[in-house]
Length: 183
Image 1 (cartoon, helix red, strand yellow):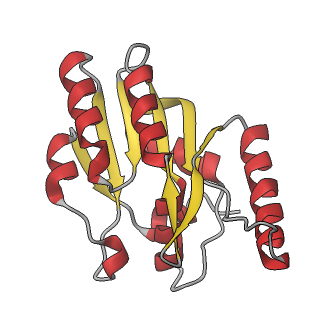
Image 2 (image 1 turned 45 degrees about the vertical axis):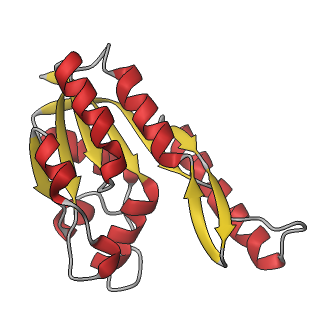
């Protein structure tokens, strides 16, 4: 069985979970979820990368912001203890909207860096920002990229087919994948 690396866009995974849970996040084990994806592809999961950013903190943080950060820190600590590589960007408020910054760049950097050691990647994401990195690693390093994605009529999940067209295989996420990794 060949080895692979799993790259998880945490914010995207959370949105998918909430959508499938009809507004309430599904409870599942992220490590088991990733390992199940690898197993479905007859691959052995050797590394898992999880990308997200801590919740926004004002100066000084509000009580609610502090509570959210404490919950986030506890969650991230559990991921790290389980052996998951956590990469964090930052959360910024722009025009009264929260926005992640740096997360896609971190994921793209890791795609390119890890291509020298692994030839099978599983990506759980939908952002076309990853397309140049995917094209680069498939062309130069002959990496096979399997994309797990979600689509729904909900506008949060609109995505360009561009990312689908540059991957070796595309698999639509369903609730079954989360259920098999349930707590």
